[in-house]
Length: 203
Image 1: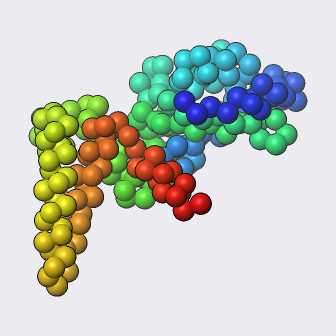
Image 2: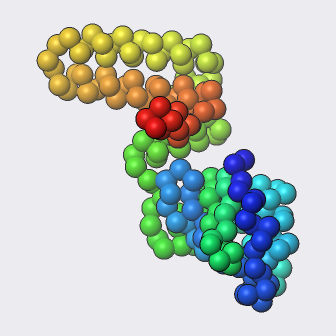
Image 3: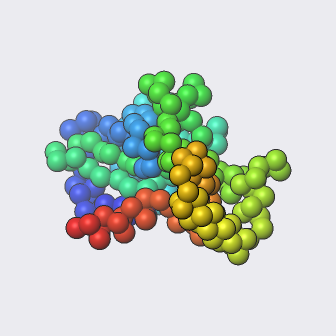
């Protein structure tokens, strides 16, 4: 995990009577999911377990998000603000973040842009295979088959590029993009990692 611990060791818990507020943000879509509080024990537990753990002011105890619902928040990154009295925690959510069943505590859908949504759906099909899912079936056939499909779709796109049929070209481009995302999931890489490579080249 790319966790910034450089400044979280300097958190000023005393300012908030032992608690600091934390904004929880989806690491992929960047949607704000919820806000809660951590004390020192909750912060340590979060870092130790890799699952975001809060301090419940109503129950007066630590609670790991998802401990009863299964809707965990898998820790990706955690940072303190400039005053060291609040946290920004980025996560990979497992299920909805709000106890009401909505994606966020503000009722907003956590979709991000469509490619992010599609990538997450593909990874869900990988981790929780569905019998009727083409994605699950393709991934189950192994990396060689997935890679072969990417090659086939790339060739079909090149063929369509030689003609002037917009619909066929765009459909082949979509097929290639989809299978490319499946290949990334099969290799357990993400589109964001590819973007980082591109950003590095651009710089």
